[in-house]
Amino acid sequence: MRIRLPLSVLFVLAACSKPPTGTVEATGTLEVVEIDVAPTSPGRVSRVLVDEGAAVRAGDTLAILTIPTLSADVAQREAKAASASAAFQEAEHGPRAPEIASAAAELASAEATAERAAKDVERLRPLAAKQNVSAQDFDAARALAASTADHRDALRAQLQQLRDGTRPERIHAAEAEAQGARASVASALATARDLVLLSPVTGTVTTRSAEPGEVFAAGQAALTVAQTARQTVRVYVSETVLPRVRVGQAVHATLDAFPGRDFSGRVVALSTQAEFTPRVALTETERADLLFGVKVEFADSTGMLKAGLPINVRIDAPLPAAKP
Image 1: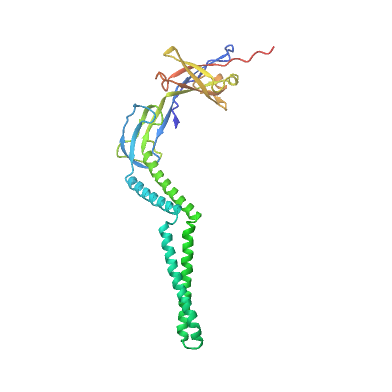
Image 2: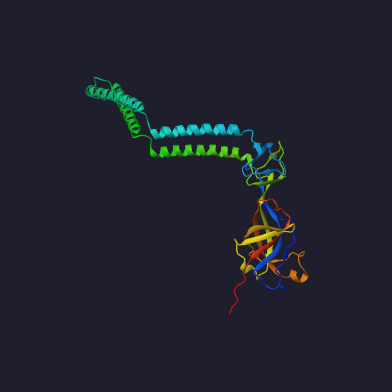
């Protein structure tokens, strides 16, 4: 955002040569707030819907930009988000009953196999002691019994895990991944929305820098909108007057061309640092005086207040009561 500062001549009418009054009068030049409208992502201008001088309202579409790969990127991110969401739901719900039943049946079969292998070892043990069975056959039976027992124990642990459900840590990890995927989609959609440049305020288009086919970088102003209903003026008061002026104080003003028309405003800011009067404004003696800036804002719905016009400002600043 920037403020157009036209060259102005500021007059402090409440000069020291005049008797003090409760009204501060000064003249300044009207200024207008201008806002640059720019994309937040680089893109190519597809359409520009307004020209310079066009009156626009807040929210009106000014221009549309495009990124050729954006639609494909959005689709890819949406697919990843769907996959991550499905994985989270699976982790949250845990194993299904048929999966648990199948694991239980597989364990029962493994338990039977392990039991048979253990019985074979016990049957062969006395025969091996009498050397009626070779040591090689007995060792093979023992190895088979150990192997089937290990397999049974592994299936038993797996079944217990299925019955316990998914660990909370894995559920949290799956949930976080799903949230990240959804955020990625939201980011891409936000980029797509930002390619449609909307007017941030009601006002007038003062600059059109964009034409269809041009490529604009992020932050590069495509258009500028002046908030014509919000006019400001900066006038200057002396150090003796400044303590009697407050932010929010009512202000009345007139234009040279319409001396009988009153415009209402309010003080919105007071300078915290003294300034020298501009050289073109006052005499050489008066230039040495230090003044303080007072910013006044007008809400104009008539369209009569234009940037660059001189305006006469009156601020009611009562004098302090005289000491007895």
